[in-house]
Structures are given as structure tokens and as C-alpha cells.
Amino acid sequence: MFTKDKSFYKSFFTLLSMLALQNMIVLSVNLLDNIMIGSYSEIALSGVTAVNQIQFVFQQILMGAGDALVVMGSQYWGQQRTEPIKKIANGGLILGCGFGILLFTAASLFPDTLVSIFTDNADYIEKGTEYINIIRFTYIIFPISSILLSSLRSVETVKIAFYSSIVSLIVNGSINYTLINGNFGFPELGVTGAAIGTLTARIIELIIVVTYVLLCDKKLKMKFRDFFAVDKKLVIDYLKTSVAFVTVAALFGLSTALQTVILGHMDIGAEALGEAAGSVIAANSISSTLYMMLKVAAIGAASAASIIIGKTIGQNNIPKVKEYAKTLQFIFIGIGLLTSITLFLLKTPILGLYDISQATRDYAESFIHVLCITCIGTSYQMPVLVGIVRGGGDSRFVLINDLISIWGIVLPVSFLAAFVFNWPPVAVVFCLNADQIFKCGAAAIKVNKFNWIKKLTRAQTESENTATA
Image (cartoon, rainbow, N blue to C red; front, top):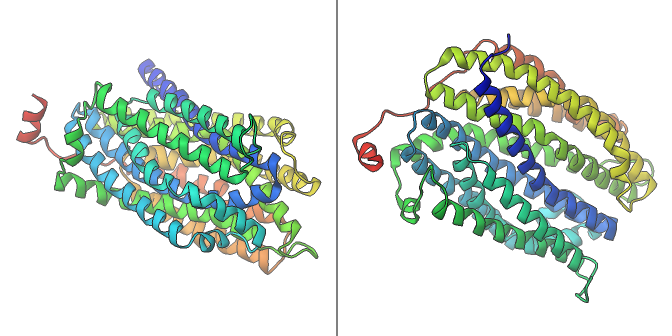
């Protein structure tokens, strides 16, 4: 049942620990913003939360573009071929920067319109617009560092992402502390101070990543000229593969953002779209951010599984692929149980860090209880579908599964629960996360059929042989 290959466990848990820690540090930047802004003003927190929904959708798109790069790149890495990975990375940069420029343009021309998608409250829109006017510049910067880190991840280089994220967290936290409340004699800038902190952190992160890729990396050995060496066939291969990845990621990001839309527009008692709705938005932000901090274990597991499965397929060792897939499923269940217990134990001390109303605190606690249940399903189905099935080359199944479960079931039912049946917010939150449970069935059936194993590599070319000689 379990693989006896010791190298598998060493490789998987090394990748898991580094990727989970790196994701935790990245999310800590958002948590830090939430806590610091939440202690400054609940209105400011709701405004920043609205903008962060846009940021979340964008990050999901970049994650999809990066995951496509990792899946293809890891198969080439299994064959010890790095030249194609460089060309695929160029496709990722084209795609990621393209989305970044589009979002930057929209945020520059229609900032208040973007924020108003998530809330009708004029005060929240004002604070959100103030925040996005600065944060929009990260939409151009972040795709470059994100795609480059994905190219490194495909060859099992993950430590630099961890170190750059630590620096980013320290920089962001220091500037937040200085500028949000006006410490050390600096002006009190509120949400503008938080935005400056995040932008500065992203700039420094980019400098670190580019410097490492060009001067320190010993696997890909990328040079500045490699960014302009476009191989049309490989870029087209990448873009075709990335369609399903980016679509799934974008739809997931949109569905998650729609939670804020639904919860922010619910008629709660007599205070329709008033303070009660604001409490629900803030509570959802708090509970979701805490949950995402712990979800990093499942995300790291999915990323680690994708690298190992892709690399093993590239080596054409199909019996090992099946053996690893069976073992990983049990590991994922264990991760889910540990995540659930930890989330429950942390809810009280974390909520104590926020200066929020009792209504917001009560909502946040009830939302966390829901997530304690659904996270067990998340920790199994998400790494199975994203890490093993999609990592093995079958992105189409994941796309169809998400379209049916999220857009065909979860969102319609949640809209009805919120606006037709007028269910309480905690019931609506459960509906919004119900797919994390029932998708486990589809994941278990699909992964154990092993019809997801697909090769995505091209045959080695003469020019490639010359480049690596």
C-alpha cells in the first residue's frame, strides 16, 4: 500500500516543508495587513478586504500559469533537459505579465468601480480605492517574480522562494508598523501606509529573485538573453497546457471573491447592507485569512506531489507513479486532520489580536467552525486533483470537475441560500465551502483509475543538444 522508496519520502517532505513555509510567509503578509489594518479601523479592514479579493483572483491566475509551467517543466527535469524549461518560462512571463498589465490598466482607470463590485458601502469603497491606487503597481511586478519562482520550482529549487518571502514579510511588517499608525514620527497614513508596505516588499522580492536566477542558480543557468529567446513551438505547447490551469485558477479565484460579494450584499436582519453586513465581510476576511495560513500544508503537498509525479512521468517510471499516488492519498488525509485540529485550537488566540465588534467576533468564530470541517476534504481532494491528477498531465478533468461543482452547484445554491431562503451567514458559508467535501468522491475515483498519466514533453532537438553541450 505504502511505497518503501525512502528517497520519495525524503524528497516529498523536504519539498512540502519548504513550499508550505514559503506559502505561509507569503500569506503572512496578508495576515499582517489584516491584523494591522483591523487594529487601526474596521472600516479600513473592510475596504482593504474588497481590494484583496481582486488581488486574490490575480494571484490565482498567476498560480495557474505557474503550475502549468511546473507540470511541464518537471517532466523535462525528469529527463534532465533544462533548455525547454527556459523557453516555457518565457511563455509564462508573457501570460502572467499580460494579465498584470490588463489589471493595472483597469485599476488605474476604474478603481472605485472595481472596489464597488464587492461592497455597496461608500466608506468601504473610499478606503478600498485609496488602497488600490498604490497596490496596482504590484500587478506589474508580481508576475515576474512569481513565474521565475515557478521555473525554479520545476527543477526542485525552492529555498530561494522561502528566503525572499521572509525578507518580504519583514519589510512589509516594518513599513506597516511605521506608516499605518504613524510611529517613529512618521505621518499616520492608514490604508495608504499598508499599501506602501506591500508595494515596497514586492519590489525587493523581485530584485532578490531576478538576482538569484541570473547570478546564483546552478540548474537552469538562465542568462538575460534567455528572456528574449522565444521558441514558438514550446511557447505554444505551454499556452495550450496553461489554458485549463489558468481557467481553473481564475474560476476558483472568482468563486472565492464571490463569497465576499454574497456575504457583503446579504440582508441581515434590519441592518441591510449596514454595519451587520460589514461585520460579516470583516469576519469572513479574518476566518479565511487564518484558514489560508493553515491551508498552506495542503497547498505545499499539492505542489510537492506535482513536482514528484511530473518528474517520475518524465523518467517514464509508470509503476512508481502509481505507487507514489497511492501513498500520497494517505498523507493528504493526515494533513487534513492535523489542519482541522490546529485551526480549532488557534481560533481564540488569533481572534484576540483583532480590535473588532462582538458581532464580527461571533461571526468569525462560527465561520472558523465550518472551515474546521471542510478543511479535511480540502486537504484530500485539492492535492489529489491539483497535485496528482493535474500534475500527471490531465488538466481537463480538473477543469470540468470545478465547472460542475463550483459553478453548477455551489454558487447557485449559495445565492439561493443568501437571497431567496435568507439563511443565516454561517449556513451560507457552509454552502460556499460544501464542494470541498463532495469533490472528495470524484477525486478518489479519478486518481485510482490512473488514466491521468500523460506525457507533455517533446523529443530532444539538435539545437537543444548544442545548447547543453
